[in-house]
Image (tube, rainbow, N blue to C red; front, side):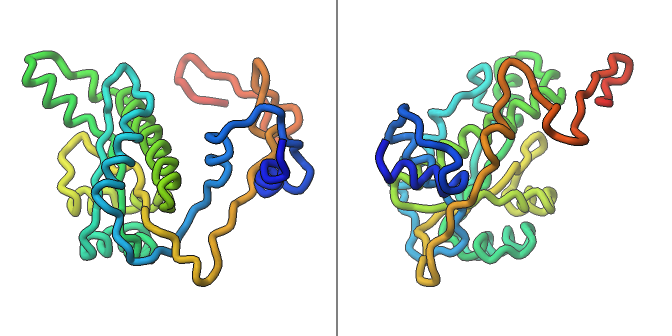
Length: 233
């Protein structure tokens, strides 16, 4: 392992807390560079860049090959400003040249089913909504990794769920389509300093082998699923 690789792990976990493994790759190296950036230059994100980013997004895994997601690319300043208000007046939502709003989209599947005269009642089940949210998240993670490989930066915007009805109105979303989160994309404005790489929990806090180990976490305890009502106790 090189000094650079150990330095990247030190930024994530703290100096010397995770020795660099022998296994490494350019992809891992790239992913460890991820930062949430909230200051952007006004330079636009080109159509070519957007096309490449969405191609990467569509290459993510998708449950049952349903592709139960869509994304709205928002460049219009007025719409970005309105989305910023919905997301708690976050300035970077307004100022980033591109806002990608990732959608759990079951309306397209409903439309296709009706055209094919096939049943679609299952779309109303919670499982289908979860599938659509997971599909959107997988696609978005591919997208932000691709954007960063092009020299762009980004930040997830969970605040897009603060006012879901207003976001739906702004973006023209029909029933069965929900804005899961936004994502700012642009070139970082590092004139006041670059965004920092944020630390992560030690791997021992998130990595378990064969079963969840809760003994080391006070108050967590093991939970039993009650079959009569489905509640976790």
